[in-house]
Image (cartoon, rainbow, N blue to C red; front, side, top):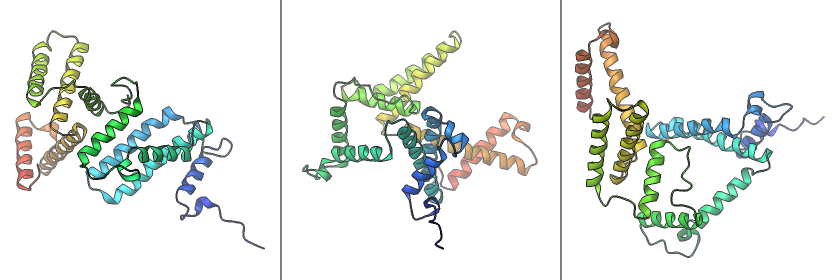
Length: 274
Protein backbone atom coordinates (compact mmCIF):
# COMPACT_ATOMS: atom_id res chain seq x y z
CA UNK A 1 0.00 0.00 0.00
CA UNK A 2 1.41 3.41 -1.02
CA UNK A 3 2.28 5.93 1.68
CA UNK A 4 -0.05 8.94 1.84
CA UNK A 5 1.43 12.11 0.30
CA UNK A 6 3.47 14.20 2.72
CA UNK A 7 1.82 17.42 3.86
CA UNK A 8 3.60 20.28 2.00
CA UNK A 9 3.77 22.45 5.12
CA UNK A 10 6.41 20.06 6.48
CA UNK A 11 8.53 20.26 3.31
CA UNK A 12 11.33 22.72 4.13
CA UNK A 13 12.15 23.11 0.43
CA UNK A 14 8.78 24.66 -0.34
CA UNK A 15 9.80 28.21 0.66
CA UNK A 16 7.17 30.90 0.20
CA UNK A 17 4.30 28.59 -0.88
CA UNK A 18 4.80 26.71 2.40
CA UNK A 19 4.54 29.92 4.44
CA UNK A 20 1.43 31.06 2.56
CA UNK A 21 -0.24 27.70 3.23
CA UNK A 22 0.69 27.81 6.92
CA UNK A 23 -0.94 31.23 7.24
CA UNK A 24 -4.04 30.08 5.37
CA UNK A 25 -4.45 27.19 7.79
CA UNK A 26 -3.82 29.37 10.83
CA UNK A 27 -6.73 31.56 9.69
CA UNK A 28 -9.04 28.63 8.78
CA UNK A 29 -12.29 29.36 10.73
CA UNK A 30 -13.00 25.75 11.75
CA UNK A 31 -9.55 24.31 12.33
CA UNK A 32 -7.16 27.27 12.68
CA UNK A 33 -5.65 29.02 15.69
CA UNK A 34 -8.26 30.96 17.72
CA UNK A 35 -5.86 33.88 18.27
CA UNK A 36 -4.88 34.15 14.60
CA UNK A 37 -8.51 33.94 13.49
CA UNK A 38 -9.50 36.86 15.71
CA UNK A 39 -6.92 39.28 14.28
CA UNK A 40 -7.59 42.00 11.73
CA UNK A 41 -5.51 44.65 9.93
CA UNK A 42 -5.65 47.05 12.86
CA UNK A 43 -4.59 44.52 15.49
CA UNK A 44 -1.72 43.17 13.37
CA UNK A 45 -0.37 46.60 12.32
CA UNK A 46 1.51 47.22 15.64
CA UNK A 47 3.29 43.87 15.25
CA UNK A 48 4.26 44.83 11.69
CA UNK A 49 5.84 48.06 12.94
CA UNK A 50 7.58 46.24 15.80
CA UNK A 51 9.06 43.62 13.46
CA UNK A 52 10.36 46.31 11.10
CA UNK A 53 12.13 47.96 14.03
CA UNK A 54 13.63 44.63 15.09
CA UNK A 55 15.07 44.23 11.59
CA UNK A 56 16.56 47.73 11.85
CA UNK A 57 17.90 46.94 15.31
CA UNK A 58 19.66 43.78 14.13
CA UNK A 59 21.27 45.73 11.29
CA UNK A 60 22.26 48.57 13.62
CA UNK A 61 23.98 46.10 15.96
CA UNK A 62 25.57 44.14 13.12
CA UNK A 63 23.79 41.06 14.48
CA UNK A 64 23.91 39.18 11.18
CA UNK A 65 23.15 35.87 12.86
CA UNK A 66 19.81 37.32 14.01
CA UNK A 67 18.91 39.17 10.82
CA UNK A 68 17.62 36.14 8.92
CA UNK A 69 15.12 35.36 11.67
CA UNK A 70 14.05 39.01 12.00
CA UNK A 71 13.48 39.25 8.24
CA UNK A 72 11.39 36.09 8.45
CA UNK A 73 9.28 37.66 11.20
CA UNK A 74 8.76 40.73 9.00
CA UNK A 75 7.88 38.58 5.97
CA UNK A 76 5.28 36.81 8.11
CA UNK A 77 3.60 40.18 8.68
CA UNK A 78 3.27 40.74 4.93
CA UNK A 79 1.88 37.23 4.51
CA UNK A 80 -0.58 37.86 7.36
CA UNK A 81 -1.91 41.05 5.78
CA UNK A 82 -2.04 39.33 2.37
CA UNK A 83 -4.15 36.48 3.75
CA UNK A 84 -6.57 38.89 5.44
CA UNK A 85 -6.78 40.86 2.19
CA UNK A 86 -7.56 37.67 0.25
CA UNK A 87 -10.28 36.71 2.74
CA UNK A 88 -11.89 40.14 2.29
CA UNK A 89 -11.57 40.02 -1.50
CA UNK A 90 -9.28 43.07 -1.49
CA UNK A 91 -5.94 41.67 -2.68
CA UNK A 92 -3.66 38.67 -2.20
CA UNK A 93 0.05 37.97 -2.04
CA UNK A 94 0.37 37.64 -5.82
CA UNK A 95 -1.38 40.96 -6.46
CA UNK A 96 0.86 42.65 -3.85
CA UNK A 97 3.94 41.23 -5.59
CA UNK A 98 2.64 42.29 -9.02
CA UNK A 99 1.94 45.82 -7.83
CA UNK A 100 5.38 46.39 -6.30
CA UNK A 101 7.05 44.76 -9.33
CA UNK A 102 5.20 47.11 -11.69
CA UNK A 103 6.16 50.08 -9.51
CA UNK A 104 9.85 49.13 -9.41
CA UNK A 105 9.96 48.72 -13.20
CA UNK A 106 8.20 52.05 -13.75
CA UNK A 107 10.49 53.89 -11.34
CA UNK A 108 13.71 52.48 -12.80
CA UNK A 109 13.54 53.37 -16.51
CA UNK A 110 17.35 53.59 -16.51
CA UNK A 111 17.45 49.84 -15.73
CA UNK A 112 14.28 48.41 -17.31
CA UNK A 113 13.65 51.05 -19.99
CA UNK A 114 15.53 53.19 -22.45
CA UNK A 115 16.89 55.92 -20.16
CA UNK A 116 20.65 56.20 -19.69
CA UNK A 117 22.25 54.77 -16.55
CA UNK A 118 24.97 57.40 -16.81
CA UNK A 119 23.87 59.49 -13.82
CA UNK A 120 24.75 59.72 -10.15
CA UNK A 121 22.89 58.09 -7.28
CA UNK A 122 21.84 61.60 -6.24
CA UNK A 123 20.31 62.27 -9.67
CA UNK A 124 18.57 58.91 -9.56
CA UNK A 125 17.09 59.86 -6.18
CA UNK A 126 15.78 63.13 -7.66
CA UNK A 127 14.30 61.24 -10.62
CA UNK A 128 12.66 58.78 -8.19
CA UNK A 129 10.99 61.64 -6.33
CA UNK A 130 9.89 63.25 -9.59
CA UNK A 131 8.25 59.99 -10.68
CA UNK A 132 6.48 59.76 -7.31
CA UNK A 133 5.23 63.33 -7.76
CA UNK A 134 3.79 62.46 -11.16
CA UNK A 135 2.10 59.38 -9.70
CA UNK A 136 0.50 61.52 -6.99
CA UNK A 137 -0.91 63.77 -9.68
CA UNK A 138 -3.11 66.56 -8.30
CA UNK A 139 -2.73 65.50 -4.66
CA UNK A 140 -1.58 68.12 -2.14
CA UNK A 141 2.13 68.55 -1.45
CA UNK A 142 1.89 66.88 1.97
CA UNK A 143 -0.71 64.25 1.06
CA UNK A 144 0.27 60.61 1.45
CA UNK A 145 2.85 60.96 4.24
CA UNK A 146 1.76 58.05 6.41
CA UNK A 147 0.31 58.95 9.80
CA UNK A 148 1.68 55.73 11.31
CA UNK A 149 5.34 56.68 10.76
CA UNK A 150 7.49 57.45 13.80
CA UNK A 151 7.00 61.14 14.56
CA UNK A 152 10.61 62.19 13.86
CA UNK A 153 10.67 60.34 10.55
CA UNK A 154 7.30 61.81 9.55
CA UNK A 155 8.53 65.30 10.43
CA UNK A 156 11.49 64.89 8.07
CA UNK A 157 9.26 63.56 5.28
CA UNK A 158 6.84 66.49 5.68
CA UNK A 159 9.77 68.92 5.59
CA UNK A 160 11.23 67.29 2.48
CA UNK A 161 7.89 67.58 0.71
CA UNK A 162 7.62 71.27 1.64
CA UNK A 163 11.22 71.88 0.55
CA UNK A 164 10.47 70.52 -2.93
CA UNK A 165 8.09 73.43 -3.53
CA UNK A 166 10.54 75.98 -2.12
CA UNK A 167 9.31 76.22 1.48
CA UNK A 168 12.65 75.71 3.22
CA UNK A 169 15.51 77.57 4.84
CA UNK A 170 18.29 78.30 2.34
CA UNK A 171 21.09 77.04 4.62
CA UNK A 172 21.78 75.74 8.11
CA UNK A 173 22.36 79.07 9.91
CA UNK A 174 18.67 80.07 10.25
CA UNK A 175 17.81 76.53 11.32
CA UNK A 176 20.30 76.79 14.19
CA UNK A 177 18.82 80.18 15.09
CA UNK A 178 15.35 78.64 15.15
CA UNK A 179 16.53 75.80 17.42
CA UNK A 180 17.91 78.36 19.88
CA UNK A 181 14.71 80.43 19.66
CA UNK A 182 12.40 77.45 20.31
CA UNK A 183 14.56 76.21 23.21
CA UNK A 184 14.63 79.70 24.73
CA UNK A 185 10.85 80.10 24.41
CA UNK A 186 10.29 76.77 26.12
CA UNK A 187 12.72 77.57 28.95
CA UNK A 188 11.31 81.06 29.53
CA UNK A 189 7.63 80.19 29.32
CA UNK A 190 7.48 76.82 31.07
CA UNK A 191 6.51 78.30 34.46
CA UNK A 192 3.46 80.13 33.12
CA UNK A 193 2.24 77.67 30.48
CA UNK A 194 -0.31 74.89 30.88
CA UNK A 195 0.94 71.35 30.40
CA UNK A 196 -0.74 71.26 26.99
CA UNK A 197 1.06 74.44 25.95
CA UNK A 198 4.38 73.08 27.20
CA UNK A 199 3.79 69.96 25.10
CA UNK A 200 3.08 72.13 22.06
CA UNK A 201 6.28 74.14 22.58
CA UNK A 202 8.24 70.91 23.04
CA UNK A 203 6.76 69.63 19.79
CA UNK A 204 7.90 72.79 18.00
CA UNK A 205 11.43 72.28 19.33
CA UNK A 206 11.52 68.64 18.26
CA UNK A 207 10.16 69.55 14.81
CA UNK A 208 12.89 72.12 14.21
CA UNK A 209 15.51 69.65 15.52
CA UNK A 210 14.28 67.19 12.89
CA UNK A 211 14.73 69.97 10.35
CA UNK A 212 18.27 70.54 11.59
CA UNK A 213 19.00 66.84 11.18
CA UNK A 214 17.68 67.00 7.61
CA UNK A 215 19.92 69.96 6.75
CA UNK A 216 22.90 68.09 8.24
CA UNK A 217 22.08 64.97 6.23
CA UNK A 218 21.43 63.00 9.44
CA UNK A 219 18.65 60.46 9.96
CA UNK A 220 17.19 61.65 13.29
CA UNK A 221 15.72 58.23 14.09
CA UNK A 222 19.11 56.57 13.63
CA UNK A 223 20.82 59.36 15.60
CA UNK A 224 18.40 58.97 18.49
CA UNK A 225 18.73 55.19 18.43
CA UNK A 226 22.48 55.67 18.70
CA UNK A 227 22.07 58.10 21.60
CA UNK A 228 19.72 55.65 23.35
CA UNK A 229 22.25 52.83 22.92
CA UNK A 230 25.07 55.05 24.23
CA UNK A 231 23.04 56.06 27.30
CA UNK A 232 22.08 52.44 28.00
CA UNK A 233 25.68 51.26 27.60
CA UNK A 234 27.08 53.92 29.91
CA UNK A 235 24.38 53.53 32.53
CA UNK A 236 24.98 49.78 32.66
CA UNK A 237 28.68 50.51 33.09
CA UNK A 238 27.81 52.68 36.10
CA UNK A 239 25.67 49.89 37.52
CA UNK A 240 28.51 47.39 37.13
CA UNK A 241 30.91 49.72 38.94
CA UNK A 242 28.45 50.16 41.81
CA UNK A 243 27.68 46.44 41.91
CA UNK A 244 31.40 45.72 42.33
CA UNK A 245 31.22 47.85 45.49
CA UNK A 246 28.07 46.04 46.69
CA UNK A 247 25.77 48.98 45.96
CA UNK A 248 22.90 49.99 43.68
CA UNK A 249 22.31 53.32 41.84
CA UNK A 250 19.57 54.42 44.25
CA UNK A 251 22.08 54.09 47.10
CA UNK A 252 24.51 56.58 45.52
CA UNK A 253 24.35 60.37 45.55
CA UNK A 254 23.90 62.37 42.35
CA UNK A 255 27.51 63.56 42.67
CA UNK A 256 28.73 59.94 42.82
CA UNK A 257 26.59 58.99 39.83
CA UNK A 258 27.93 61.96 37.84
CA UNK A 259 31.50 60.93 38.66
CA UNK A 260 30.83 57.33 37.59
CA UNK A 261 29.19 58.60 34.39
CA UNK A 262 32.24 60.71 33.53
CA UNK A 263 34.50 57.75 34.32
CA UNK A 264 32.47 55.55 31.99
CA UNK A 265 32.67 58.17 29.23
CA UNK A 266 36.46 58.35 29.70
CA UNK A 267 36.73 54.56 29.60
CA UNK A 268 34.75 54.42 26.34
CA UNK A 269 36.89 57.11 24.75
CA UNK A 270 39.98 55.18 25.75
CA UNK A 271 38.49 52.10 24.10
CA UNK A 272 37.75 54.06 20.92
CA UNK A 273 33.98 54.36 21.39
CA UNK A 274 32.16 57.62 20.76
